[in-house]
Length: 591
Image (tube, rainbow, N blue to C red; front, side):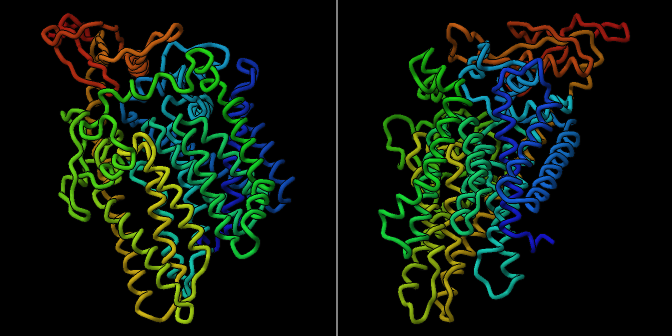
């Protein structure tokens, strides 16, 4: 039964999956393309994972790991085959994510051959590599989209087991329901919801980072070697998903360090605790991070320095030019940008609204109905949802009230674990505040987790007085506010999938004609270097997709509406046109 799913079992399940994924990524960096196929590498990596689990925790955990991997494979297969009729949502997937995944699945090795697409050549390829295994083994072009859902489900189980095992309640049913709701909130971050069935990597970054957080929490409270394996595997994946992981990765580990210092405050003086943590965990995690960057992430981290003299290329300020709301541009301090993002009205920039449209502020707790359908894959304004500012404020007040009330030790009891979780949440919050683009929700997804971690301490306060009721009422309102944000994210996700579905309906009509012209909407910004001349492969991607549907295409550099019998727009910045001179496959002319 799910209510008997122990922390230890959940830890074994999650650690097995993340160790397996890390081994797959390591295998992708070996020069075995053309020698070993994905169908061989996947079972070898699974076997090595089981051996590592056996060496760390014996036969019982090995059986759990085997069942976990089989369940993970089943989830990926069901998701991949069940969603192939849906086209991916989002622009960037067609511009560079899909070409990278397909090329990796076909045998491209990023270390040995530069890619013509500047983004593929300059960005981390780790998550694409994992997706490419799914594409290669299933033969389905969009199968890589299943990975986010698969990881989210098992990290959700990991979070549920932790909360169900640690939250204080005399009534198991109350604890079970609370654990289920909070674990659901952890996974249902609006950034995740609006990036399901997209190729954006902010949601995977959040899911993997969240897994690392729960591995560290588990290891601090119930030490075990598999949790450390999980952290190391998570670090290897995390640092090779997105360049912002170089910022958040060390800070997440630092948050775990702070959490353990608080948790073990009564055992030793500060300096011995610091030394003990570095000896038992810090050195191991640092080694995993260095390996992840220098070896697994050689491309792009090392090659960017060798080729361009910079760790990040193209430069962030050049990329953000034209992408930033006008009232958070310029030299504004990052914490102020964060406040703009938190107190923003939830509004989209997709349907005819300029990307530089200003952020509009509002009073916490107020909302308009249209905010519940505004979120979409790339939302720039109020991306966490209409009630996030209220949830964050109430969660902070709730924790402060806990600490004030708990000072009366005669009437109330308090667990240091609540402080430890809040300390970790504080590190996540501050790191989000100081991120350069802290106004953009999808760039600071861990702010959502920090809010949840400030709500949790209310469960560790015990006492018969009304102060406990007040504290928990504040926490409940914060949770309800987060649920409102989840509703907004879910409805926004449904809306974007509806729009995407309508945009691809004309493909059925295109099948009737001899040819369809595709024209790329060119970006006014030009990014390229001496080895990468393209910054969008969207036309080639759509040509491949249409070819699978039996549609012949040609690339047309310039679009002319007057010459088209039918025309429309595909995500990724591609205009399609059925030219008037095209013939129907039945033999008649288009006109």
